[in-house]
Length: 269
Length: 276
Image 1 (cartoon, each protein chain N blue to C red):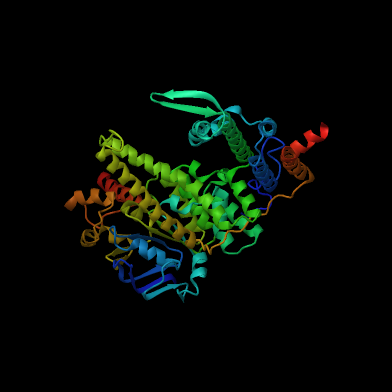
Image 2 (cartoon, rainbow over the protein chains, first blue to last red):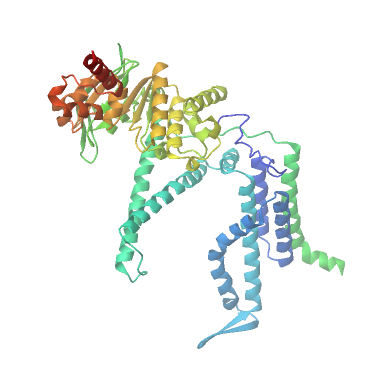
């Protein structure tokens, strides 16, 4: 927020990628995701995944961390990946029999599921690498530097800051419920369990609401007037630009090749 | 001693109808160590929010350094009176310790060099300079409390007000905090503490202000804490040291000591007299 030679403007960081200026990293990775999310040919998506892998290697990102991030989106994506092959019309390739139901998986459906999975993996992994390379405060400052609306950045910062407080509160409440021998004894059909949990959610909402009030008062007490200034970013060096342009160019090349792929193939014939 | 803060007949009513302050009148002398005591719901927190212009008087006056607070000088008041809230999680909101301590000075519109100088100084004053890049949620409660204090110190206020500063701190944390407050006071800052901790008030304060139901019940020296009628009326209790001497009743003539050091001195004189 205020230093020029600020350890938090730059991650410090151990690899050459860590040291790339934060704004460049943000722009490069976001562009990468936008470009690759639009691709629909499996070989090019795989190539993009390869680039991501290469970046992860250069950044010395632990494989377990990457896998963990990927696992985070599994619950959201699995449903779609399972449903798509059976709902997209096309040439049947496999049959699943569920009792009286016979479901046909189509080639088109499988292909769509595969493309979707690859796009998702690309996006999630690119974002993970960005957050791995850039400490959160640095990332937020970079967003401010890139003129992302301040209210959005502030919202993200507060979410991360108070998520932990809220989780702590929830844990304490859970413990004190357990201390009085409460245990979930069923799901929607068990009204005692549900009403207790609903009350807890309600109390959490009210507490965060009143806490928000107190946080705001404490900010006013230190003269907050509505805007938070941007900490000056580090000087952008030529090597930073090279990395940024390199990553963007790689994604752009893949996209162009995919768009023009058909044409080139015809020219070659 | 001139007064840094004078409160005259202050009234404040919340929108839900709660009449929090009803004619509060008190004086905070410049450079003093002041403890404000009173039962829950006495209006302490409401009063504290008046001290730097977050709440403005609905009736009555709050004078800070001779200037009556109103909407126009509320910003100035914030740089003069630093408020440390009870729960540091309410106050320390930024992503890192350093950013949080810079928050106040930046709001004051200081230039980058000055902000940096002040933040560094404030963090050193509370012994947190090594943890400047940490995220608040990785700190202990006592550390967060010290960051909260640093965030206010960085604004170089002439008065620093702490709401229940000792709550939830471990013994070492309490000692650290007392040492910080003592240092601040020595360097010329007026330190005001709102607390339920009568032992802390007895040990530390020069002036005690007791409020109840939005009015001042009494203000004066720490002797007030040993006044039975007042302790009863304010729903307080005697300091532990005083309790011991009161138990001994007629054997020991009043005035009874209230601080550990006073008690030791009292006993020393007593014992020396006995041996002669």
